[in-house]
Length: 158
Image 1 (cartoon, rainbow, N blue to C red):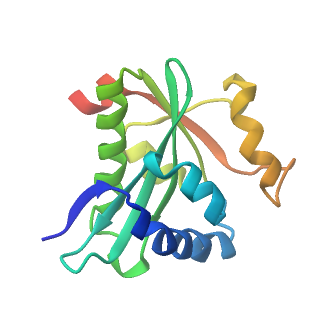
Image 2: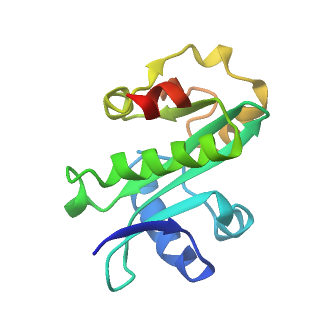
């Protein structure tokens, strides 16, 4: 049976490989080993019975009432099987548990996030604090990702 659980130290190399696979395709921002170890507690992994990481997603706290869903990646052969949806929901449940009201994402997969209950937002309405990661992106300052956000309670009650 496949499960979602908090990432562990032993998952870092698998997470790194999965994220950088999609980063090489220009679909998300890659993460260094150092960044993954620094933010390991942000990550949830979708694993099979053998412990293989089939998907990953992170909830990164940015402010007292705002967090970001980021680094969502699912192996190609697992896409279309609700793995991404389950990972996003797990992150939203975590946000609710710790008292975060709003969650945003910057993504090239806006349609997917709209299906999860996120709505479009102007990037300029997001706090400047979030742009720290953007400095590491090869597309900076010409970001072509779309910004979306949701109210956690509304999405989880839908």
